[in-house]
Length: 232
Image 1 (tube, rainbow, N blue to C red):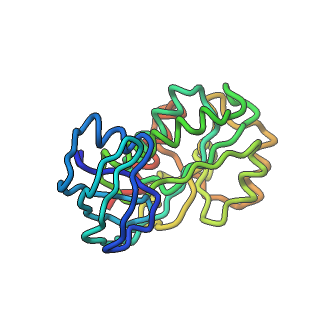
Image 2 (tube, rainbow, N blue to C red):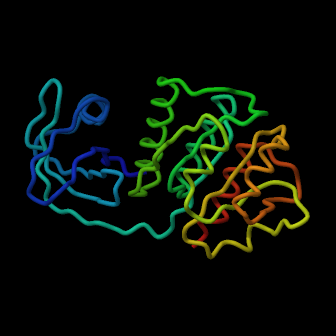
Image 3 (cartoon, one colour):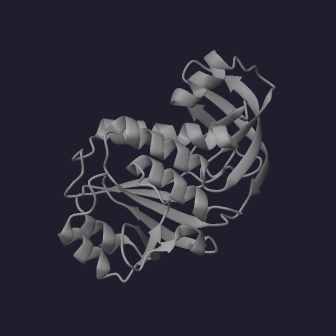
């Protein structure tokens, strides 16, 4: 884990002055106990890694000067669409799939979801998990989290190739799709998709993908599928 890496939403242009605020400022000042003149790394979740020198540390913010800035293109855009589960399971899936390279998270209410709806506090909690995982694993792209009230509205949003992880006579091993660079994995609830949802996703002519010979929990399926499709 990069010990001196911090997240900031700025563009991170070389020679620019930026201010680190909120929890990241608190972590730099009170946890890492950084000092003026030290160099740290900054990421903005948009593919940019910068080094910066601490110019001043105030009560509410840290001012830094960008010394170097390097942008790295995203190799793959593998999105994860997953039916809402109870929060501990969802948090685990979000954390691990961020580490494994998920491009974005598309959360939705399924007919058979064991949890319905996503509050603002819960969404903020998930966003903080993605930021923490981003810094921990060293990646440079922060996955966006979107929420949809049902599968139909989610499917209307998807433009990439759709892989549905569900039992079907046309199912192929997910290892067959590892060369895809732009795709969306659709994971249903643990009780399975409702028949009306199956009819809905079939309209989009998806590829049916099996993850494992065993029946996996929703969060396990999400982690395993993301890992498979982000293999280098």
